Structure formats: structure tokens, C-alpha cells
Length: 251
Length: 253
Image (cartoon, rainbow over all chains, first blue to last red):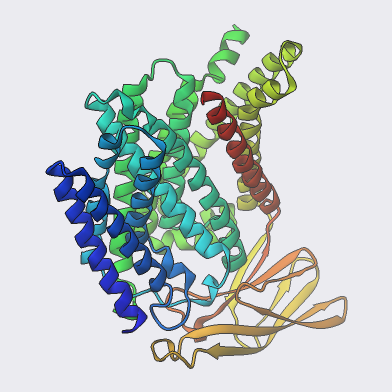
């Protein structure tokens, strides 16, 4: 069995296990749901790691490709929250976005974008790692903001997700700028990708200022973070469609 | 009256709406840049004023977002400067009533804003000054630099993947030999992808397009006076943010 088939098999198993955990969550079978979710996360981890060797040599950028890495980050955050927060019923509602984003991976090409010489730097995988981690925080923030708006007072920790998402996103922009400078001689390019990143950064920078505006209570902040998620989804989804047209190796 | 104008200029409410409008402006800009690459791609290789002369002024209906973006950023710059000064004066007058740690913590948002202003200034300097040239990295190509020096491409060699099978024929690395001449003195240096050369205040880079075509490698020559401001501002901004929110988080617990 090659690493390519290990990666793909584990990805399909992970999606199956995530869907199983969602079913058992709806049926309120907590233990079985936890078993399926943890199993899904383990299969997903194996799939992601083996994805790095998808084409026979190690390509670190492939590990952090957003479509595949985002649901892994979401699952990781769910498991992390499970140990930190008391209200597990509330936390496990976020299996839904994990399932939704892992389902998307079924419909995109599984191969990897050929490694270009400009990607052979430590800053390239670091950029993708922090960018996707930030997106995952924004998704989780929006999800718990949505729960907060539906009379779940305990979900007010959505604000922390947005703050840490913004910090990760800023780190991604710094590593991305260094990568861009060493590869393309500029810290900022007038390209749609860079402008979209700047748009998302400014949106969440605006969110960070809400703490100084008393008129913006938690309910309004929750609404704003859901709007932020819509912006991220809209701009990132367009990126996915663009990447689907790229030449790929290995499937 | 002056005091009222000062207070209004540094209002956080205005900061919030400005950032929101800038965000929407940038989102709209990304669609224009994607839809009209023939107009906006050269913006990466020209100084702003030169790009406007050769490209921008011919398409006023496609570049409106650039004017609104610059206007909003200018207003944001003024807004943040006033807000930061106001807060620093306020905190400084009360510094003896708090510990050094509390004072540092409360001053951090102002320092973050200063870093942001430094970054904005760096971007402006990069866009309107310095030197930016893109040319084909083909042996024999020659160009002059504004410091009475010239460069010539001597040689180009590319290394391709032989294995695994899937990667066969894809470019792994290229190296280009450059002859640099200043005041009659000649030196030969080599550059490669992600291996730039820094010489007499100029930097020399190799780049290639997304199709990774080895025959279309470009040599970029830059003198970017704003880069240090942008990079140092951003690094300090992120470090301060990390420290600030970690401390706030600890305080909440």
C-alpha cells in the first residue's frame, strides 16, 4: 500500500467517522459519539501527515493545504475545548462545521500542487499553517457566536476565538510577507490573493476595536463575527475554485 | 472648538467604521485586480506615479477603488495618530498612580497603533520611491542602474527533478550569473530562487510565473526604502499583540 493510498483511505475513513459522530450526537449517544469523533480525528491526522509524502518526496506545503487542513484544525480545536471547558454538550455542537468542511474535501481534486522553487522555504508552510489555523478560529468563533445568539450564554467564549484567530492571522501575514519578499522581491503584491488577505485582516482589526465601544454588546459582536465568517468563507471559497483549476500531481 | 475637532478626529468609533470600509474596499479591489490583470499587474513592477501615467489614467472607471482606498487610509492615519497621542498623554499624566506593569499593559494598544502607522508609512515610501525593474533573465540582457552601474546576465542554468516519476521535468532550482560593473570594476555573482543578491543598496531576485516555465524566468532588481519599516513594524505589532492578549487572558482568569 503506497502512502498516497494510505492518505486517501484515511481521509475517507475520517469523513465516515465524523459523519458517524454527528449521527450519534443527534441521537444523544454521547460515548459512541466521542469514540467516532476521536477515531475520525486520528484517521484525519494520519491522512494529513501521509499527504506530505503524496508524490514520493516530502512537500511540507501539501500538509497545510486549506481544504484538507481546515477540518483537521477544527477537529483539533473541538478536542482542545473538550478538555478546557465544562459544557461538553455545547462544545460537541461544533461537530457540524467539522463535518461540513470535511465533506467539501470529497468534491475537490486530491492531488497536490507541484512544488515550485519559490516554495522551498520554511516561511511558506508556516504561512499556510497560521493562515488555516486563523480561519479555523474564525469558523469556531462564528459557530459559537451563532450558539450564543440562540440563548446559550455559556458560548460567550466565541470572542476569544476571534482574538486568537486575529493573532494567528497576523502571524500568517508576517511569515507570508517574508516569504513574498524572499521569493518575489516585495512584501505586498497587488494581486487578488493579497488584497483579500488584507480585507480579512482589516475586518477583524475592526472587530478588535469593538471592545472599546460600549454600544457594541456581546449580541452585536456575535452578529459581527458571523459576518466575518461569511467574508472569510466567500473569499476562501473563491480561492478553492481557483485552486481546483491548477495542475495537480497524484490525483 | 479645536478641542472638539481633536476629540472627533481621534474617535474610536470612526476607527471602527474606517477599518470596516477599508475592508470592503479591499474586497472590491480584489475583484477588479482579478478581472483586469492587464491594468493592475504592472502596478507590481512600476512606482505608483509611473504606473498611473502609463496605465491608471487611461482607466478611471476601473481604478476608483484605488483613490477611495488611499483616501480612507489617509483619514485612518490621522485618526490613529490623534487617538494614540491622546491616549499616551492621558496615561503619562497618570503613570505614578499605577505600577510599571499596568502602565506597560495600558500603553500597549498605543504602541500597536504606532507600529501600524510605521507600516503604513513604509508602504507609502515603497510605492512612490526607490527603484523597481523586471527583465528577462536571458544571457546577454543588460541594463543600467541609477548609481552609474550596470548589470549583465552572463549565464543561466536550471536543475530539474529526475525522480520521482511525477515530478520529472519540473524545475528544482535555477542559477543565473550576473556581471556587475561599477566605475570600471567588474564582479561576477550568482543568484537563484530564494537566494537573492544584495549589492550597493539594490537587491536582485529570480522569479517565475505559476506555470513554472524555465524559459520565462525574470530578473527583478529593486531598491525598496520602505521594506525595513514595514517588516519591523509588523513584527513588533504582532509581538505586542501576543503579549497584550496573553496578559489580558491571564487577568481574566
